[in-house]
Each structure stands twice: as C-alpha cells, then as structure tokens.
Image (cartoon, rainbow, N blue to C red; front, side, top):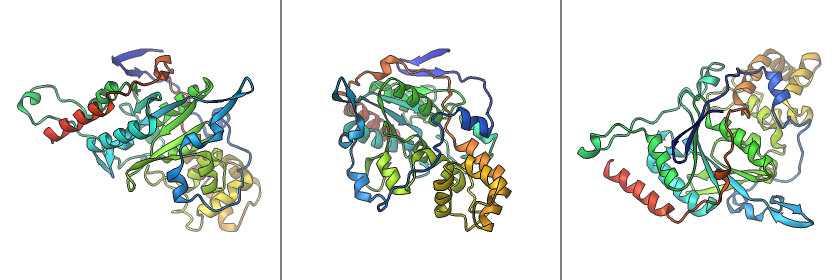
Length: 359
C-alpha cells in the first residue's frame, strides 16, 4: 500500500483498482451477512428524550469479560467531516467550527478521533451506476482571504483549512482519492473492531445505520437542539422493530431522497415503510425477498407485481447504498492513542476569529 503523508497527520492512500461487484457477490462477500430474519421486539417507538439523554457510558453492552472481571472497551471515534460543514444545504465553515467545538468538549473528550473527508471524485463510483446519486449536493467554493496580505498567497481550499484545524487538535485526517468517506469509515471501523475497540461514528448520515451493533454506535448532530446525541442498537430496534442488519434492505426499498436514490414508492405508491418492514421481518433480506417473489407469491397482487417488475431497480439501489469495506486503507497504531486536548478551544477560537476577519 502506498502511504503519502501530506501533513503531519493527513494521509492519502490510493484505492485498489477492483471494479464494482454484482449484487449477489456483494451479499456473499460483505461482512457481516444480512440476517436471516429481523428481530421483532414489542414496545413503543423510541422516545425523543431517550435518544437525547443517552450516553454510551450507560451501556452495559460496552463491557466485556476479561479474566472473569468486567473491563470497559476503549472507544475510537470516527468523524465524518463533510456533513458537519453545511448549514442546511449551504456550505459553512462556521458550522464546522460550531459542531467540532461541541464534539471535542462534550462527546469525544480525549478519546482517539479519526476524521475522514471525501476524496476528489468520490461520488463517481456510484454515479456510474446511478447518475442521480448526490447530483444536487453543493460543493465548497475556494476560500480566499479578503486581506491584501493573504490575497497574495495561493488560494486555499476550504477542506485544507479544516484539515489544518483538525491536525492542530491532534486528529488524523484521512482522505483517499476517488473514495467516499462513508466507505473509508466502514473499512476502518471493521479494523478497529478486530483490534477489540468500540467504534463510535459521528455523522448525521443514515447510511451508517447499517453498521450499528453492540460495539458500533452513532452520535448525531441535532441542529434544532444544538447538541450531539448518541444513537445505539437499542434505539434502532425500538424505532424500527427490526435488526440493523436489515437496514440496508429497508433503505433499498424506501430509497434515500437526500442522496438522490429513488425508492419504490414513486413507482408503487402503496408500497411504504409498513409494508417493507413486514416483508423484511418475514424474509430477512432484500435478496431473500426478491428470490422468493421470483418463484411464488409473497403478498398482495400489487406487492408481488412491484417486486417482480422492479427487481432490477431494487438491486441497483443495493449496489449504490451498501457501504464498501474493501477500501485500500490501513489503520495506524498512532491513530489509536489518547488525544491531547488541552489546546482545542484556543485552536477553534482562532479558526473562528480568522473566519470573522475574512468574511
């Protein structure tokens, strides 16, 4: 593997040249396999205050037996940088500063943090399969200082400013050409779990729900409450009455409007969330469901017709929405060290002051 150090803590790794696998090959090779059946659990959907008041320190799931004594697993945080650099749909460096300040001071503290940014041309891999994929996503424009002194310097991209700030806060930044941050995070999470750590993914992206398990949590920014909030396996099961291993299959049916991935509702209006959950609870995965529908009746006529007529559409959604775990990137041991955090607030304050001077 080629590893080029761009700055003290910014690494660029070149991806492998392997092409996209077929739907069935992905199912066979993607660890862990989609469960044979969804877990059903009674009880009301997760309450809003349960989500907001939860902290991972309260989870007994995070404790493992070691020499007959309970020992808490160490956490590694993965920061999905791109989504927190937006205020709604508008690129905003002030948004990044606000969320990273809250993240360091209230969430990650001194735990290891690995930040991941989309590489150049990151979306092309999926756009070749589905041209509408993230077609409306606005990009950062180049940032130029208004001062005469800085104006003479070369133009700096916003992501470089972000990377520099994270570096100063002792956070390694991983950016891989032609790879989306989601796939890089999924690959590194698997490596972290193999080393016996607990992974926490900081992102509002729904794609990461397919990774949730007892050792993988999400922490999401909630703009309306101006805080981060943890989302766990228990939250997911309470909300969907279904195991996260079937989340990918569910999203293939429902689609993802924000990412430009059309669900089946615009083709079959009566085919909604309730119907999808019922089918997945019985068949376990999209592959099992489509295979069953190809040889026998699995539901009402409109359901049967939708599954047989639009099977290719659903399989394409699977190819687009499934997170890859084969990105050519390797976890570095120094990324797992306790993070010095003494200067976080000063660094972020200086970053905000710089934005104010040059706005």
